[in-house]
Image (tube, rainbow, N blue to C red):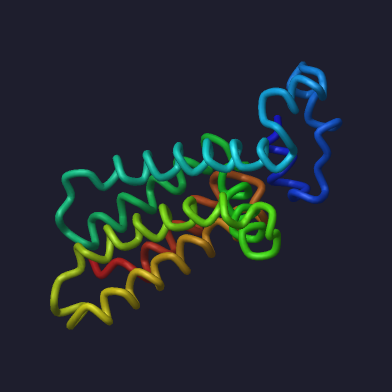
Length: 178
C-alpha cells in the first residue's frame, strides 16, 4: 500500500493518514512502528531495493559472459515489472528523493550504491576488447546505471507488461552484441 502511494505520488504527495487505512492500521501504529513518515519511506525503499537487487544478482549468478549477463539482467527487469509495476516507479522515487530531500538522503544513498554495485558487477564481466582499462570499466558501469535507470523511468509511462517487455527487448538489441 505505502509503496504504491509513494511510487505514484512521491514522498511529499503522500501522507501517513492516507497510507494507514490502506494498510488496515491506525496512524499511531505506523508512527510507533516506523517513527515517522521518513522512516516508513526508507523502510519501503529498503524492501524494494532488497527485492530488486537480490533478484537481479540471482539472475546473473554463474554467468561469466558480459552479453549473456546483461541479457539476463534485462529479462529480470521485465519480470520485475510484470510482477509489480510499482517497483520500478518506487526506485525512481528513491532516486529523486535521495537528491532533493535532505531528511531522506543519508538513508537512501546506500540503496543507490547497491544499484551501482550491481552495474559494477556487470561491467566487471566485460571483455578487454570492450573496455580497455579501469576508467573505461567505470564508464561502462555508469552507462549501465543510466540504461537501467532509464528503463525504470520509462516503466512509469507504460501501462502494460507487454509494452515494457518490448522496450526491454529493444534496449537489449542496442546493448547486447549477440
